[in-house]
Image: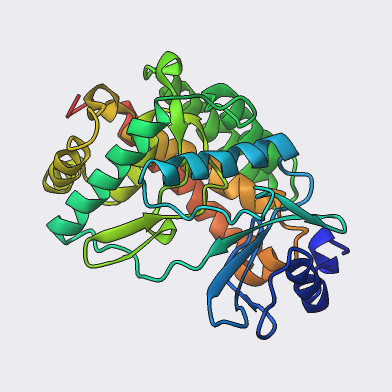
Length: 325
């Protein structure tokens, strides 16, 4: 099946880079990226660059530009992020043929270790800096987190596919609807959404020692501040989060007031992500990168497991108490 990224040959990538006056030493090397195409290269002077080609027809030009402008705002305020390169005219969003792309200086480092209290403190400090700037403005072209819309879109995407057999479809529809009911019981702070990274998992944080940089703002949106915190607390049992969270909060409050009132949203946000992740894989299956990277999606056993995960999360929410609110 033809896909827009199928036209993104190595020769096209090289020509796109050279079209903005940057000269690669050799062909760029593809990095692990599925939503977009992200490649690493060095220029003639040995400087490392990352080039990001945006998925066609996903975001409007205004939405992409808003992401890039937000990164420049954060960088100007001293928040360590992967800021986009600007040409002599200050342009950050570039075009070559049908592709839109941006360039970034390479960031070197490793993901933080969540078992290290000093790393947790540093991550909290980073997020506090981010949100202190985030609260000073709003997105106008990026999405805002909307519970009902996101759940319904995920359900429709999965149920309209042919991945599930009849039994699985009935089970999925039942448990996802029940989970939706549970999610709606929690107070979603629609009046206090801020500009958030949106996908703040360990793969998007790079650094050394206690100096970290937040990268890949492709999913930035208006969302509760806790959206950028909860994925740093991967342990399923809330009782095991207390020590980790206390370090994050302490670092965060060096730069901003921590949103304690949103802690009750951690488990609901986990449930929302479970629903959306599988729907995202289904929606992108025509992209050849996805069958290669996620072959288990075609296995009936995956959907049995996914349904069980949704049921477990529904039970968690059924007896969930905002234990730290």
